[in-house]
Length: 112
Image (cartoon, rainbow, N blue to C red; front, side, top):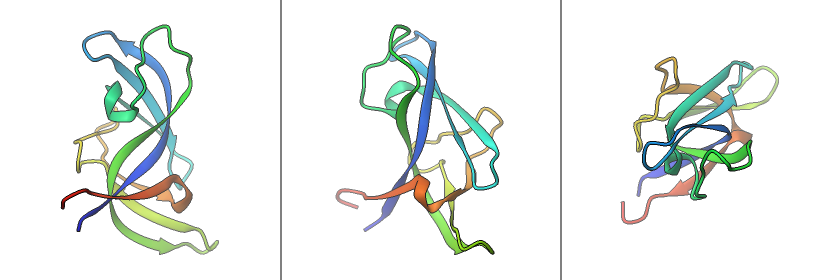
């Protein structure tokens, strides 16, 4: 069984009304670097969002865990890839990140 995870993000705004609607979301990695994604709203939430929705809103990005370690301060750090399963990249073209364990929740794939 394959285990994927979900990275918690903050949906910050509506950016394009092309179907099904595109939104921007952001998160801060373990090194306090901000990252922004722009993609179809359903990639980040099950809520129906549009230009009149209230922002920010909680969201998530499905990802795959690549490794876990602890840093010198004892924090759990998880290296993730947002390439699988939804091919999500940051606006800077990044899809691999090191995040805090508290930012990620595990989910099991059905039927995998």
